[in-house]
Length: 187
Image 1 (tube, rainbow, N blue to C red):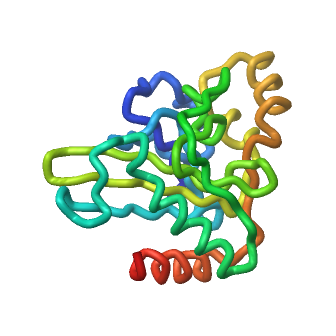
Image 2 (cartoon, helix red, strand yellow; image 1 turned 90 degrees about the horizontal axis):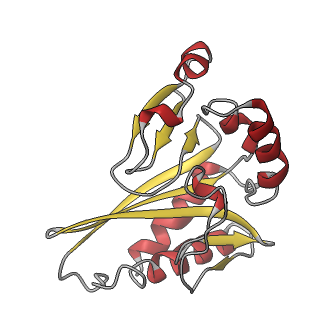
Image 3 (cartoon, rainbow, N blue to C red; image 1 turned 30 degrees about the vertical axis):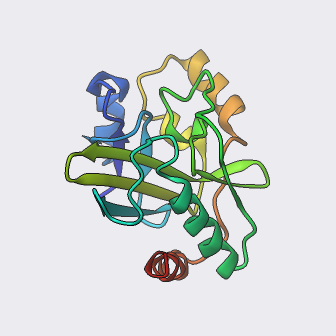
């Protein structure tokens, strides 16, 4: 079932519940990340990765903890013929990034030709870190904005401003998953 996945700090009022319900889209919350993500079959690949505290991949610094994951996604994309680059810097916010996940760029996240294609969020406990990754296979900001509680002017502005911040990957989701698993198994 399609869903709007809210970030950990977002209120359910962010979603236009009546619009989502009419479109057959559930509204749920993840315990990581900041902005909303529209999850629909065929539109993205969602991968959760858990790293136990003390594992060789464990990094206590949250700003550096996703570096290895960004490299793994970049290598996975290269293996399916897509040249990407992972962001090795601080969080880059935009006026839309607290509302829409793919409107900002965090450490380890991946871009292709300047457009974000892989988003990564993390939830940390004493036991370890859960990294939630979304790789876009299709991107249309308007599809998400249509399901959020926005007035018509803000929705139209968002369509213009967010059209090129992210992009879908022209790859098979299954091939990408296989390539990513191979990269992580070798990490």
